[in-house]
Length: 298
View (cartoon, rainbow, N blue to C red):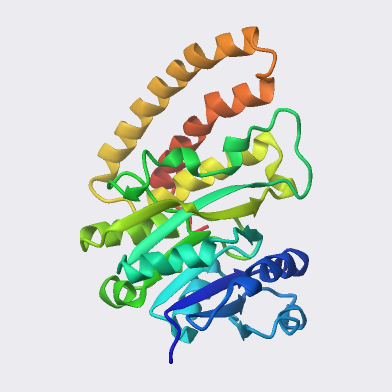
Protein backbone atom coordinates (compact mmCIF):
# COMPACT_ATOMS: atom_id res chain seq x y z
CA UNK A 1 0.00 0.00 0.00
CA UNK A 2 1.35 3.40 -0.97
CA UNK A 3 1.75 5.99 1.80
CA UNK A 4 -0.73 8.82 2.07
CA UNK A 5 1.80 11.42 3.19
CA UNK A 6 5.41 12.04 2.18
CA UNK A 7 7.56 14.01 4.61
CA UNK A 8 10.12 15.87 2.48
CA UNK A 9 13.16 17.42 4.15
CA UNK A 10 15.27 19.53 1.81
CA UNK A 11 18.72 20.10 3.28
CA UNK A 12 21.82 22.17 2.55
CA UNK A 13 25.11 21.61 4.42
CA UNK A 14 23.61 21.25 7.91
CA UNK A 15 24.40 17.69 9.05
CA UNK A 16 24.18 18.46 12.79
CA UNK A 17 20.75 20.08 12.56
CA UNK A 18 19.49 17.53 10.04
CA UNK A 19 20.36 14.73 12.46
CA UNK A 20 18.31 16.39 15.19
CA UNK A 21 15.45 16.94 12.75
CA UNK A 22 15.38 13.30 11.64
CA UNK A 23 15.65 12.00 15.19
CA UNK A 24 12.52 13.97 16.08
CA UNK A 25 10.50 12.84 13.05
CA UNK A 26 11.39 9.17 12.64
CA UNK A 27 9.60 7.97 15.82
CA UNK A 28 6.39 9.61 14.57
CA UNK A 29 6.23 7.63 11.32
CA UNK A 30 3.72 4.90 10.51
CA UNK A 31 2.69 2.91 7.46
CA UNK A 32 0.79 5.90 6.05
CA UNK A 33 3.89 8.09 5.98
CA UNK A 34 7.22 7.98 4.15
CA UNK A 35 10.29 10.11 4.81
CA UNK A 36 12.49 11.63 2.09
CA UNK A 37 15.68 13.67 2.42
CA UNK A 38 16.58 15.77 -0.62
CA UNK A 39 20.25 16.77 -0.34
CA UNK A 40 20.93 20.06 -2.12
CA UNK A 41 24.25 20.74 -0.45
CA UNK A 42 27.87 20.70 -1.55
CA UNK A 43 28.84 18.67 1.55
CA UNK A 44 26.78 15.50 1.12
CA UNK A 45 24.91 14.22 4.16
CA UNK A 46 24.11 10.67 3.03
CA UNK A 47 26.13 9.36 5.98
CA UNK A 48 23.73 11.10 8.36
CA UNK A 49 20.64 9.81 6.58
CA UNK A 50 21.95 6.21 6.72
CA UNK A 51 21.56 6.33 10.51
CA UNK A 52 17.77 6.51 10.02
CA UNK A 53 16.41 3.35 8.45
CA UNK A 54 13.06 4.93 7.50
CA UNK A 55 14.59 7.75 5.46
CA UNK A 56 15.15 7.64 1.69
CA UNK A 57 18.04 9.74 0.39
CA UNK A 58 18.20 11.66 -2.91
CA UNK A 59 20.79 14.14 -4.12
CA UNK A 60 19.60 17.14 -6.17
CA UNK A 61 22.53 18.64 -8.07
CA UNK A 62 20.74 21.81 -9.21
CA UNK A 63 21.41 24.28 -6.44
CA UNK A 64 18.33 25.97 -5.02
CA UNK A 65 15.60 25.18 -2.51
CA UNK A 66 12.93 25.28 -5.22
CA UNK A 67 14.83 22.65 -7.23
CA UNK A 68 15.02 20.44 -4.12
CA UNK A 69 11.33 20.87 -3.38
CA UNK A 70 10.43 20.01 -6.96
CA UNK A 71 12.65 16.90 -6.77
CA UNK A 72 10.66 15.81 -3.72
CA UNK A 73 7.47 15.89 -5.80
CA UNK A 74 9.05 13.54 -8.34
CA UNK A 75 10.45 11.07 -5.79
CA UNK A 76 7.49 10.98 -3.40
CA UNK A 77 5.02 8.10 -3.28
CA UNK A 78 2.45 9.84 -1.10
CA UNK A 79 -0.55 11.81 -2.30
CA UNK A 80 0.54 14.79 -0.19
CA UNK A 81 4.08 16.19 0.03
CA UNK A 82 4.66 17.66 3.49
CA UNK A 83 7.70 19.99 3.51
CA UNK A 84 9.55 20.30 6.82
CA UNK A 85 12.68 22.45 7.19
CA UNK A 86 15.92 20.60 7.95
CA UNK A 87 16.63 22.86 10.95
CA UNK A 88 13.37 22.13 12.75
CA UNK A 89 12.13 19.91 15.57
CA UNK A 90 8.72 18.32 15.02
CA UNK A 91 6.01 18.42 17.66
CA UNK A 92 4.94 14.91 18.71
CA UNK A 93 1.47 15.47 17.23
CA UNK A 94 2.70 16.92 13.93
CA UNK A 95 2.19 13.88 11.71
CA UNK A 96 -1.04 12.64 13.32
CA UNK A 97 -2.51 16.13 12.88
CA UNK A 98 -1.34 16.24 9.26
CA UNK A 99 -3.03 12.91 8.56
CA UNK A 100 -6.28 14.33 9.94
CA UNK A 101 -6.11 17.05 7.30
CA UNK A 102 -5.47 14.41 4.64
CA UNK A 103 -8.56 12.51 5.80
CA UNK A 104 -10.57 15.72 5.39
CA UNK A 105 -9.17 16.04 1.86
CA UNK A 106 -7.56 19.44 2.48
CA UNK A 107 -5.33 19.82 -0.56
CA UNK A 108 -3.11 22.52 1.00
CA UNK A 109 -2.43 22.98 4.70
CA UNK A 110 0.28 24.26 6.97
CA UNK A 111 1.10 25.24 10.50
CA UNK A 112 3.12 27.29 12.91
CA UNK A 113 6.81 27.56 13.63
CA UNK A 114 8.11 28.64 17.03
CA UNK A 115 11.66 29.73 17.87
CA UNK A 116 14.30 27.20 18.84
CA UNK A 117 17.24 29.09 20.40
CA UNK A 118 19.92 26.53 19.66
CA UNK A 119 22.56 29.29 19.45
CA UNK A 120 21.38 31.49 22.32
CA UNK A 121 19.12 34.53 22.53
CA UNK A 122 20.15 38.21 22.80
CA UNK A 123 18.27 40.19 25.46
CA UNK A 124 16.55 42.36 22.85
CA UNK A 125 15.35 39.45 20.67
CA UNK A 126 11.57 38.96 20.76
CA UNK A 127 10.00 35.51 20.26
CA UNK A 128 7.65 36.80 17.57
CA UNK A 129 10.68 37.70 15.41
CA UNK A 130 11.16 33.96 14.85
CA UNK A 131 7.56 32.78 14.57
CA UNK A 132 4.75 33.04 12.05
CA UNK A 133 1.95 32.95 14.65
CA UNK A 134 1.24 36.65 14.25
CA UNK A 135 0.64 36.21 10.51
CA UNK A 136 -2.77 34.56 10.90
CA UNK A 137 -6.06 35.92 12.16
CA UNK A 138 -7.52 32.51 13.06
CA UNK A 139 -7.04 28.78 12.33
CA UNK A 140 -8.98 27.34 9.43
CA UNK A 141 -9.40 28.32 5.80
CA UNK A 142 -7.10 31.19 4.94
CA UNK A 143 -8.17 34.49 3.40
CA UNK A 144 -6.33 35.56 0.26
CA UNK A 145 -4.01 37.98 2.09
CA UNK A 146 -2.54 35.35 4.45
CA UNK A 147 0.17 32.89 3.43
CA UNK A 148 1.44 29.59 4.81
CA UNK A 149 5.12 29.10 5.60
CA UNK A 150 7.10 26.71 3.41
CA UNK A 151 8.85 25.25 6.46
CA UNK A 152 5.72 23.38 7.57
CA UNK A 153 3.58 23.04 4.45
CA UNK A 154 1.69 20.12 2.86
CA UNK A 155 0.47 20.11 -0.75
CA UNK A 156 -1.49 17.45 -2.65
CA UNK A 157 0.11 16.39 -5.92
CA UNK A 158 -3.08 17.31 -7.78
CA UNK A 159 -2.26 20.95 -7.00
CA UNK A 160 1.15 20.71 -8.67
CA UNK A 161 -0.36 18.95 -11.68
CA UNK A 162 -2.83 21.80 -12.14
CA UNK A 163 -0.75 24.91 -11.37
CA UNK A 164 2.86 23.74 -11.78
CA UNK A 165 5.75 23.34 -9.35
CA UNK A 166 7.87 25.79 -7.35
CA UNK A 167 9.39 28.63 -9.39
CA UNK A 168 13.12 27.86 -9.54
CA UNK A 169 13.95 31.52 -10.18
CA UNK A 170 12.84 32.29 -6.60
CA UNK A 171 13.87 31.14 -3.14
CA UNK A 172 17.12 30.23 -1.41
CA UNK A 173 20.04 29.27 -3.66
CA UNK A 174 22.84 27.74 -1.65
CA UNK A 175 23.93 30.38 0.85
CA UNK A 176 22.29 33.20 -1.13
CA UNK A 177 19.15 34.42 0.61
CA UNK A 178 16.00 34.38 -1.47
CA UNK A 179 12.27 34.49 -0.86
CA UNK A 180 9.00 34.55 -2.69
CA UNK A 181 8.70 31.00 -4.06
CA UNK A 182 6.13 29.98 -1.44
CA UNK A 183 4.01 33.11 -1.87
CA UNK A 184 4.20 32.95 -5.66
CA UNK A 185 3.04 29.32 -5.60
CA UNK A 186 0.18 30.19 -3.27
CA UNK A 187 -0.84 33.08 -5.50
CA UNK A 188 -1.31 30.50 -8.25
CA UNK A 189 -3.31 28.33 -5.83
CA UNK A 190 -5.61 31.24 -5.10
CA UNK A 191 -6.19 31.90 -8.80
CA UNK A 192 -6.96 28.18 -9.30
CA UNK A 193 -9.38 28.22 -6.33
CA UNK A 194 -7.46 25.79 -4.13
CA UNK A 195 -8.36 26.42 -0.48
CA UNK A 196 -5.46 26.67 1.97
CA UNK A 197 -5.81 25.75 5.65
CA UNK A 198 -3.83 26.95 8.66
CA UNK A 199 -3.72 24.77 11.78
CA UNK A 200 -2.03 26.11 14.92
CA UNK A 201 -1.70 22.50 16.17
CA UNK A 202 0.71 21.70 13.34
CA UNK A 203 3.84 22.82 15.19
CA UNK A 204 7.57 22.80 14.57
CA UNK A 205 10.34 24.51 16.52
CA UNK A 206 12.53 26.26 13.98
CA UNK A 207 16.15 27.05 14.77
CA UNK A 208 17.08 30.71 15.02
CA UNK A 209 20.39 30.69 13.15
CA UNK A 210 23.29 32.71 14.53
CA UNK A 211 23.30 35.07 11.57
CA UNK A 212 19.64 35.88 12.23
CA UNK A 213 20.42 37.22 15.70
CA UNK A 214 21.36 40.66 14.34
CA UNK A 215 19.33 43.72 13.35
CA UNK A 216 21.15 43.97 10.03
CA UNK A 217 19.87 40.53 9.05
CA UNK A 218 16.27 41.64 9.59
CA UNK A 219 16.74 44.69 7.38
CA UNK A 220 18.70 42.88 4.65
CA UNK A 221 16.28 39.95 4.53
CA UNK A 222 13.29 42.25 4.20
CA UNK A 223 15.05 44.17 1.45
CA UNK A 224 15.55 40.83 -0.32
CA UNK A 225 11.87 39.96 0.18
CA UNK A 226 11.01 43.16 -1.65
CA UNK A 227 13.44 42.28 -4.44
CA UNK A 228 11.84 38.88 -4.91
CA UNK A 229 8.32 40.32 -4.78
CA UNK A 230 9.26 42.63 -7.64
CA UNK A 231 10.32 39.67 -9.78
CA UNK A 232 6.78 38.32 -10.05
CA UNK A 233 4.74 41.51 -9.77
CA UNK A 234 1.75 42.03 -12.03
CA UNK A 235 0.24 45.18 -13.52
CA UNK A 236 2.02 48.37 -14.63
CA UNK A 237 5.47 48.62 -13.07
CA UNK A 238 5.55 52.43 -12.95
CA UNK A 239 2.24 52.52 -11.08
CA UNK A 240 3.50 49.80 -8.71
CA UNK A 241 6.67 51.80 -7.99
CA UNK A 242 4.74 55.01 -7.32
CA UNK A 243 2.37 53.14 -5.01
CA UNK A 244 5.20 51.50 -3.07
CA UNK A 245 7.14 54.78 -2.82
CA UNK A 246 4.08 56.52 -1.40
CA UNK A 247 3.52 53.71 1.10
CA UNK A 248 7.23 53.70 2.00
CA UNK A 249 7.09 57.36 3.08
CA UNK A 250 3.77 57.04 4.90
CA UNK A 251 4.74 53.86 6.77
CA UNK A 252 8.14 55.26 7.76
CA UNK A 253 6.55 58.37 9.26
CA UNK A 254 3.85 56.38 11.05
CA UNK A 255 6.40 53.93 12.45
CA UNK A 256 8.58 56.75 13.75
CA UNK A 257 5.56 58.26 15.48
CA UNK A 258 4.43 54.90 16.91
CA UNK A 259 7.70 53.35 18.06
CA UNK A 260 9.93 56.25 19.13
CA UNK A 261 7.93 56.89 22.34
CA UNK A 262 8.31 53.19 23.24
CA UNK A 263 12.08 53.52 22.96
CA UNK A 264 12.03 56.45 25.37
CA UNK A 265 9.61 54.97 27.91
CA UNK A 266 9.88 51.17 28.05
CA UNK A 267 12.78 49.38 29.75
CA UNK A 268 12.24 46.14 27.81
CA UNK A 269 12.19 47.89 24.44
CA UNK A 270 15.69 48.30 23.05
CA UNK A 271 17.28 50.34 20.27
CA UNK A 272 17.54 47.12 18.24
CA UNK A 273 13.75 46.68 18.51
CA UNK A 274 13.19 50.28 17.43
CA UNK A 275 15.38 49.84 14.34
CA UNK A 276 13.52 46.68 13.31
CA UNK A 277 10.06 48.15 13.91
CA UNK A 278 10.79 51.40 12.10
CA UNK A 279 12.83 50.18 9.12
CA UNK A 280 11.72 46.58 8.41
CA UNK A 281 8.77 47.46 6.15
CA UNK A 282 10.73 50.41 4.76
CA UNK A 283 13.49 48.02 3.66
CA UNK A 284 11.04 45.66 1.96
CA UNK A 285 9.49 48.42 -0.13
CA UNK A 286 12.89 49.86 -0.92
CA UNK A 287 13.95 46.45 -2.28
CA UNK A 288 10.81 46.28 -4.41
CA UNK A 289 11.40 49.75 -5.86
CA UNK A 290 15.12 49.24 -6.58
CA UNK A 291 14.56 45.85 -8.24
CA UNK A 292 11.75 47.23 -10.40
CA UNK A 293 13.73 50.25 -11.57
CA UNK A 294 17.12 48.52 -11.83
CA UNK A 295 16.34 44.80 -12.33
CA UNK A 296 18.95 42.21 -11.46
CA UNK A 297 18.71 38.45 -11.69
CA UNK A 298 20.06 37.89 -8.18
